[in-house]
Image 1 (tube, one colour):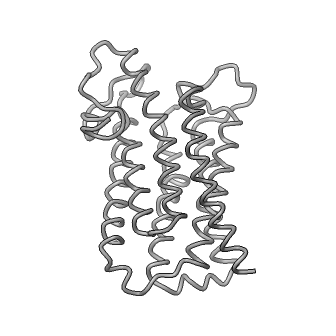
Image 2 (image 1 turned 30 degrees about the horizontal axis):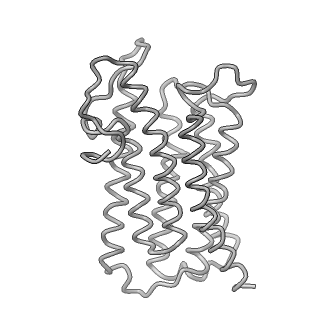
Image 3 (image 1 turned 180 degrees about the vertical axis):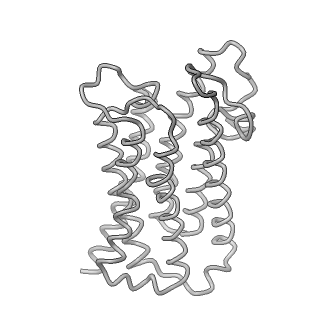
Length: 255
């Protein structure tokens, strides 16, 4: 039974890699169906705070359920505990804090929320079940350069993501409407600094975990957020004549 589930978790990780390229292609061709790009003709939609809380919650609830409802033998090891804590900390912020900081926000089509909910359930199970039951690390893994570098990248990426979201929330003064060019922080270099932070964060997690499961999530994050960042970048260029042409799409000084 354990071997069968371990093979299943590997298969789910490789499937997530395949989905990364599929979603990149679809989002590049069709665009992201939320926020300013959402169709106003959608029959069913949720407010932005509600959609964010609902769709992100499985990434927090599923790992907690896995830890409580199973033996979670591997969580007796510090490397496994820290890696799972990294995952849970991010989604505590994304599902319980971030949604309540949103100011306004366009409605999210119900189908987009359902798709995100499904992925968060899938990935939440994949990451938490692997780390709690099957990931084998020596106690000295927490001093390995791969783990230390990955942890630092995760922390820096999360701070960039939170700071960039703060900049976006405060673009408008009370009573103002319309869109503005983001200024400050890494927005001086890229159009999607918040996405850049999240990519760095999960690449760090993937490096620290040194696993197919962690790497698959990092790849999925990069592919999906790159497609969204390209859409944002093009929108800014078309919307604002004075938009800084030196800004890259997602990665400072690269693209």
